[in-house]
Each structure stands twice: as C-alpha cells, then as structure tokens.
Length: 260
Image (cartoon, rainbow, N blue to C red; front, side, top):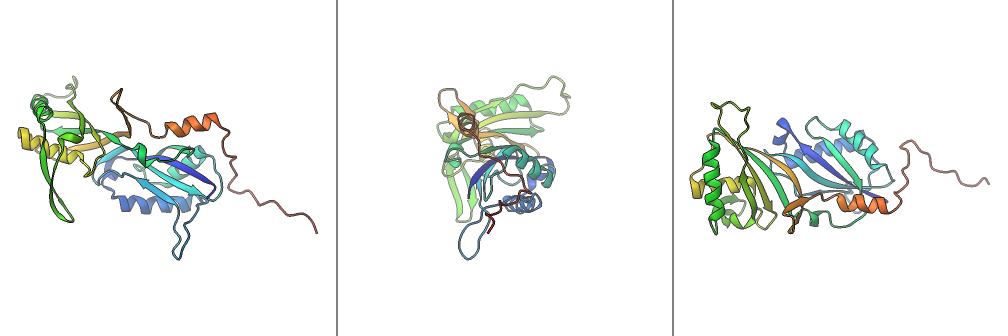
C-alpha cells in the first residue's frame, strides 16, 4: 500500500434507506468501474483495503459519512473523487477526498450533529418536550438488540438539543417541528431514534409519522467551542505543510529497464 485516501460521502433522498452492506457493494463496484488501483489484504482471501467508520443507521440521511481506502499506486485525491462519484448512484455522492497524512480517523469521530424533522408536531410542544428532556438527570430507554432488550440512559450522551425556530414561509396547517441534536459517540451508541424514545418517555412527545433524520456532521467534539469539527482538517493541514504524493496517470506505463 503506497497511499491512503479518505473520502466523505452522503446518503440522500431515497438512498437513505440503503443499508451499510448495500453501500459496500455499490462502492466496491464503483472502485472497479473507476479502475482504482486498490491495495489488497494478504492471506487466502484477499480483499480491497477499505475501512468504514461509524456508518449511519439504515433509514437516516447523512451529509457526513467517512471511509478510507488504500491504493497500490498514488492518485490525485480530487480526480479520484470525481471518478468514484460518477460511478456511484445519485444520492450516494462522494463529496470530499483528501490524502491521509495522519492516523486515527475513527478516533476523530467522537460526536454527530443530527437534524430531526417531526411532521405533524407543533413546534411549541416540541420545545416544551426538549426542556423537559434537558432538565432530567437521566432518561432511560429500551432497545431490542441481538442479545435481547437493553436499557440504557440517553441523556448522558446528549451534548445539546434544541427546537429550531418556525419557518416563516411554512403553511400554518402543516405543523412541523425541527430539532437539532448533538450527541457523543458512547458505548452503547445513542442514536437519534433513542432520543426520540426518550422524548416520548419523559414528555409524551409522539410524532404521528416517522421522523426524517439527517446527520449533518460528525467529527471531533471541541469542548471549548461546543462544536463538532471537520475530521479531515488535520489531513488537509498536513498536506499543505508537506509536498503531496506525486500522482501517476491511470494509463502510465512502467519504466523500461536498461537495454541489454
């Protein structure tokens, strides 16, 4: 492996219902179509070096999913991004790429920013429910797992939760509350639907239709500013501080050896 590229991709529209396994299949097809010179693992069943990090749950949209690929030959990150994006279904869009110059991408994904659209919920009711949730010391919910039903606290993982102001141009007969949620990535993981279950438990907030959930960002949580930072920023900074790896055209030939 001579180069690592980190990619940011989205799950938009109907493609938010794509499972992580479905995305893996689509992405590996895109790698073949784009003729990406992948590095492969060793052993009896070699597989392309692709590392996925903290994928969003099936059914949620996302503007901030991340993965890393290992290459057997260097490529320009932006040109590689364009080739892969052209080979992916619309909605699964590759929107950013950077050469990995630092370690620990997964370690920089410590929090997420989510938007929850609650159709049929009065914004005032949502705001009161948010206040009740935030004043509670603990908010326990249950989730069914492969090992049975598990009870855990959702309140401790929530950094912030707010009801956004009502949009002035939205029809009055079409109530919709919008919540903005920042949640830490803890164990067990607290998902947006767990927070919704908590709101129902402590404030009887029950949307009549399933919430439309979108991850807006994920990255390292900055304790001082209270914001979620871009996890690819350290790699971009390292690239500007050092000369980039020389890109090799896809059709380049190996140099010939000296004549006999």
